[in-house]
Picture 1: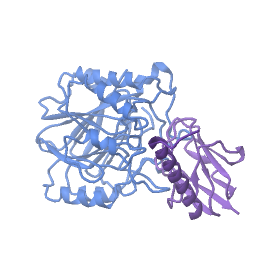
Picture 2: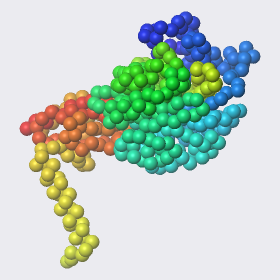
Picture 3: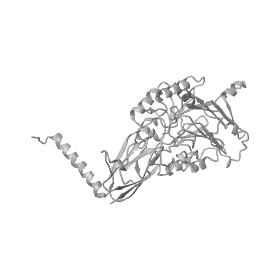
Picture 4: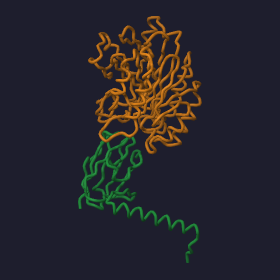
Length: 321
Length: 123
């Protein structure tokens, strides 16, 4: 247990008594479920002890990986390629393989072609072949994201600087770009063109359609002092308010944080490369050095499961230790 | 004696174009990027996601050098596009510009836009 989780006690009207004590720090593996509007979580260990099981007869399960930072080689993790491989090994070992992966950005450290090459090469070992991407700021450093778009948007009908949507089973997925054309003094940004596209994209969907939004920088104000937020995310969320189930996945902050606001669940994933400090606990959000034996417990991936007929999506974080 | 072959004709032409470009920058009174080492007094250290010092005053024609001491890449981008932006600077990499016309130049890191700074150029 810890106080790392940032959450909102206002604006949502949900009774979340008992919610706070369920907030737990990354590394234990958490099952998140929403039932009757009440969010609850149990650690994987608690589930095993109770003889409970993970959701079965799952209609759709997919996996989120994030912030692989291939090319980083500083003290916080001198071999990010190796920890990325370990994450893929975990995916390959899952009893029920995920239908696809979502990578929420920062594939590379410095947007170098050879870093993208290494990522692509290592990814070949993953049995799950379908991967959907959104860029992190590290992937678009010097060319406005051209190299990224040329490589990673081949299987989608991307618009503008690389946003798109697709449907899997009954779920509508939306990949957003909030790392380009950032303004001095500002946060992550979606921009008018993308927001107009989003409004049109969801306009004709029924309110019972489960929505999954994924972007690199959080679409909620995690810690604006460190740039951990998106300036125009409120407008985006306004278009999604009428839906019964909205799950927003992001990376960027290299730690698990979760917040529920109305029907919207925000969830940020661990990195496969290095941890970052909890909001405000360090002079800056740079890579956090931890003892070598602790590192893999602070890296990880996120599994998301959707059951037909149930609006809730279960989100489970697992570390690499 | 050097003869003007087709190959070095091209080189001469390219040099000429490069010279012309630099001249244009100077005439326009803009700041231009410069790879040479600058004097120590106008150094801006990038540490903990901040430019330090945040404001630097420099004489026109003087140099300003940024050095990145973070483990994160950072960039130097003029808010009003008054000088050429840097590429992403990795740890310990530097970027130098020569100050042009007097004025106040705001800049930021396009990767972490919360990071902002100012260069004041005096006559």
